[in-house]
Length: 200
Image 1: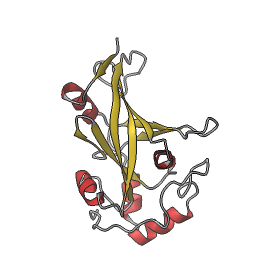
Image 2 (image 1 turned 30 degrees about the vertical axis):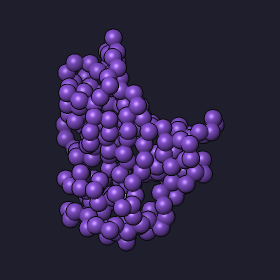
Image 3 (image 1 turned 90 degrees about the horizontal axis):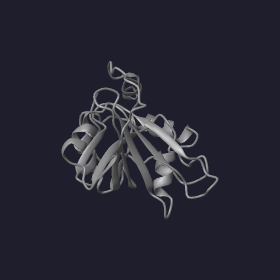
Image 4 (image 1 turned 180 degrees about the vertical axis):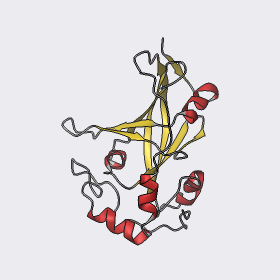
């Protein structure tokens, strides 16, 4: 039987912090808009800030649907999901509201410090999620999968770019400045970092 939880604490927090991958889901307000579902990995890119708040580091290399949906006026809905691929079966979801903190936001420095081990040239936003509903379900149909190791291609690829080169990359890539449905997404030109990204 699934349960609801008031807070991200104890074994719920431990479960979240132990998972090597999670998923994010967002959608525009328009009924005919594109629902977005994204896998998120890379060790050190998700943190539990407090009992109701999480944050993850948003990188370049893909589109910006999540950012667009969070920026849409009256929207901001987001769901995070984790699956247990080993140990006791569990699926955990956090439904909430999200906000994208960009590089020129005065709060950027405080947030990016949470990701020191994963920070790098392709960091373009920090997504802060405030939980409204925390629940789990059985996960009986989720298969056992063995975690081997982190993929390094993403970090290695963008480590070869300067911040200026990364900004130019973002401007050329389709569906970064706006979503599939034409909603404003990542601010372009990409704001320069007011702090120094960690060298790789």
